[in-house]
Image (tube, rainbow, N blue to C red):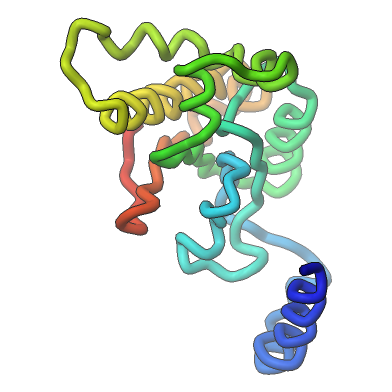
Length: 186
């Protein structure tokens, strides 16, 4: 199984990399991404693929359910580096429909580690009314959208964003796995 990825790298080097050597040489010296992407770790949601971008254009941070928590040193470091050193002013939180993390939050029965990780998103469960007739698919969609909005709002709690708030542009997007389209929800 691992050979698939080793062979894939060889094919990449012999094809795309050689065909675009000047570009890869340029980005090997310095990165200048224009977007910070905070997204889900789901293997079906690759930021460069779904935005038709090249390597070096998007600075990426991914985790289960695209959680933003002030207690998470990793996201804090990413924000400080992206905004403070790379001068990125556009920050996107991108969730996706059919998110296993959000579904796990809604249905429960998680391992202690996953439950602890998802805890910062529990308040979204109150945003979808139980008295409204929704299919489980539609409920999950509403929860995914609510989670993106919550996580974007959480970004404003970080000092690096508070300090230069008027310059940083925050965006909330949801990716639809069935259509391939991104939609703005914030």
